[in-house]
Every structure is written in structure tokens, then in C-alpha cells.
Length: 283
Image 1 (cartoon, helix red, strand yellow):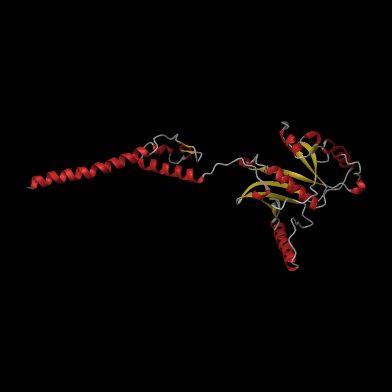
Image 2 (cartoon, rainbow, N blue to C red):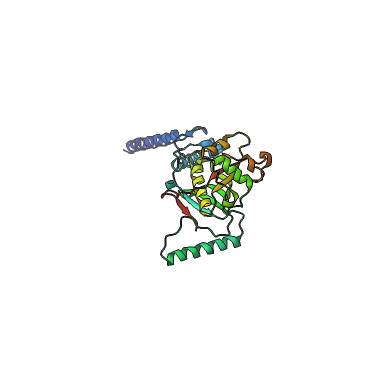
């Protein structure tokens, strides 16, 4: 009787062991066997798991960890689309330039809060753009879903008129009425930078609209810039498509004689209001 029990017990253990072994083998076969596995949907590969790549080949445990890391990346990484932005997609924030001192930033904060309080007391709507009169440079930032994707440095106090500027306005815009007595006033764009993954999505043209509007609100009627494309002509052509004109007579005036820092260009400051879906935060 004991022999029969032992035989049955052995068969029972065998039947219980076989499914467990099969389950373990199936899990092992599901693990990646190559460090070159490419998860297409998440644009992520095991080559990027540098901390566990070498151990993937030697240890089952590290292989499981590598696989879980890559699966997490597959779920979280979203491919960047090329859909053009509109003003409704972005928030524009006016900030002091990075080199501003702590005292300058504290003064800026105090003045903006005071201005907001004045409008609140008088029950008036906040203006689209407001800047302290003495602020000469700002950094305009473009934000998308809580992330800063671009920044643009500009001047905000128009410079004095000069004969080369008047002549350039006449040549580029056919404005024969322009003269020094009417004060052709210009502000400038210092730099423009868009994060690489957000380029070719209409951020630049939208930024030029906002910059032009800010310049107009500050009393300028033209915007100047120096386009440096290392001689390729691509950046110059891009600005020309945005209604900017070559201004060779202003090379010296803009500090780029003989085009040493780029090609000087000029465009009109925006006289009309921005679209209602454009959000600008100046506080």
C-alpha cells in the first residue's frame, strides 16, 4: 500500500511540476535576446539602457530589469509631430534677460504687481502688454504644455532716427513721406532660438508677430535684426518670407560692418492688434 502511495505521489508531483516549468520557459522566451531590439512605437531601443546592457547577456534578473525599463519608456515617450502651431497652442511670457540682476528682477516684480493692483482697483481690464518704461531689453519665451520651447531676445526702447534708416525705409517700403522729423523709430531683435524638436512648426513666424506687436506698443514702427546664416542664405530667405527686407545701408549702424556678424534686415512693426487667441503673460 505504501509503494502505491509513493508511486501516486511521484506522479502527482510530476503533473504539478510540468505546468510550472512550461510557464517559466515561456516567460524566459518572452524576454529580449538581443540588445538591438527596437521598440518602434516609443522610438526607444535597448541600446539606450546603457546601465544594464552588458548584464542583459549574463543575468536573467538584469534582462528583466532592462525589459521593464524599455517598456516604461515605450509608454511615456510620445513622438513629436510636425503639426504647425497657432497662437492658441502657445503661451508667451515676457521676462527679463538672463543677465539681469536680482535687484532688477525684484523691481520688475514690484512694478508689475503694482500695475495689476491699479487696474484691479479701477476695474479695468489688463492691457495686452505692459512694461516698465525704463526696461530696454526683455526675453520673450514661448511655452507649450508647461514646457519652454523657444526664447527671443529683443530691445524695447526705440533708438533715435538717422538718415541711413530713413533712406532704407524709403527704399524698402516705398514710403517717400518718411523723414527725420517724423522720427522713424526702430527696435531690434537680438537673437531667436527654438528648441530643435519644435522647429518647422510655425513658432518663428508667430514669435515675429508678437515681437512686432510689442515693438509697436513701445512706439517703434520698424524692427531691425542681423541674420547670421554663415553665408547659406537660408535664414535670410526665411526672414524675407516673413516680410523683412535687406538693409545693407544699416550694416555699420547695427554693428556688423562688411556682414561680419550677418546681414542686416528691416521689417514693419505690427500696427494691428494680435488675434484674440494669443496669450501674453507680462507679470
